[in-house]
Image 1: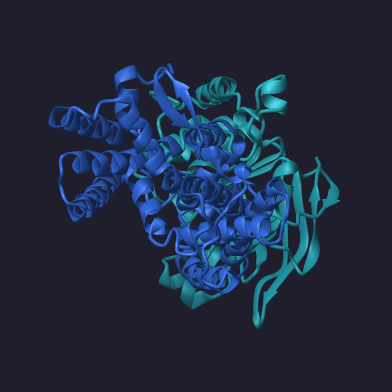
Image 2: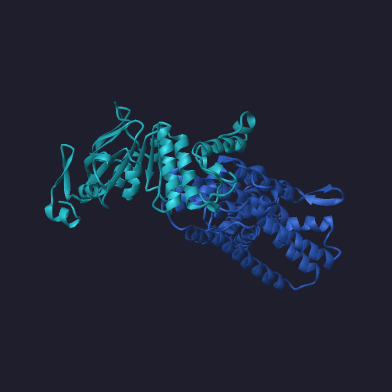
Length: 269
Length: 323
């Protein structure tokens, strides 16, 4: 099976700091892939490189097996890769339908649209309603400004927008970080529905219970590289954390203690 | 779950112009009781004439404030535009229409310069336009040598002419001002460009990440605002019949007053251009009504100041509630 999105040997340096040090990445069709790693492991740089927000110094990115280059986020989006940014998802004073179509507005047919550049608000509202319903996001009105919604509903709008436009991949950066328990549950349900529709999801998260609840596979990033690809069923949370921090390494699919002191400190030996 | 439309009363209450409109109506009712000359067609035509220059400047100001910017240079740019068009026509003998076009172009160019400085060097709009205010003010006095330009060709005062609507004289300038407000209400409310201006005012980073070309948008907004100031210059020239280097010195603050009274937030991203029209009319109605009541003009300034502080307080409180 060809990975949907793939990276080989990505390098990104900022002066003396090496954020990515030959990182690989593979996203398979129809899966939820969690990307985890300590602070400074290069998770964010990796994701930014994959979504066009930064340009790697070396290495290549392949979409459906074909090499691609994204000069900016817009180009990645044109290739069907949509990203939900943690705090930068929606324009607060604009309504839901406008947010769904921001930057991709639909104009009225005929001279009203071509000559007078008039927006087709009705059609955008109807299509937004359909997308929101697909993800079972219940909202009173699509004309209410996004700032009047709860945090979970706002995240819902951002996810619905990403899903509506993503033909290949949805990337979510810490989508539950700012949310309460119930709202996090709603977002996890949404991620499942997105996967069930056949769109693979890349989930960056610090939250191990969420990762174990939803991920089909886990990509562990450490010191600018991918150090392991795991299935949540094969490992417990403590082992995964140990791999993430370098206390254990993975050899032949088995977690092996690499740093005895560190492993004992977190109760593994 | 079903998605419903907001009910009509809720929609009216959540309309940002509802407050300013209520204030305008209440002020009109008050002055109608206080003076029997207030509620006449002639008086309303006069009010519109009195607010049309500041109102037009306030259209450009609204655009810039919606992007979370501010423009202190608009009155000065207008004064310079007025001098350029009148001097070119009267002293250099340029055909009047060409001179007008040159004045509009000069104003647009200053808007462009503001926009480029804000975008490229990422300077705060307050500082950029404060500097531009002084530069343009000085240029106006150097270029005009402090002389008022008189004996204008009729093309330049045409907008000051009147036509009759049901027994009331209305100037063509008033009509042009109303049409400009309607045009920008349409552009902001019904086109993608307008949506992008609001998104930019909400958060430049969100706008950029959704694929909006924010740099181009900022420069465009300032340039369009400059062009609108040029139209204000023509309105001013047609109303006063001269090119006056002293014109418009407090109009920058008056235009901000109109925008704020109209319910547009100084934090950007919230507000409407029709609100600004209402804001300009509130100032005009208060000045006119108090004058008819024989209140000294310094009290008009006092009341305008109190109204502005009230409007900003309401904006701040309503923001706190939605957060």
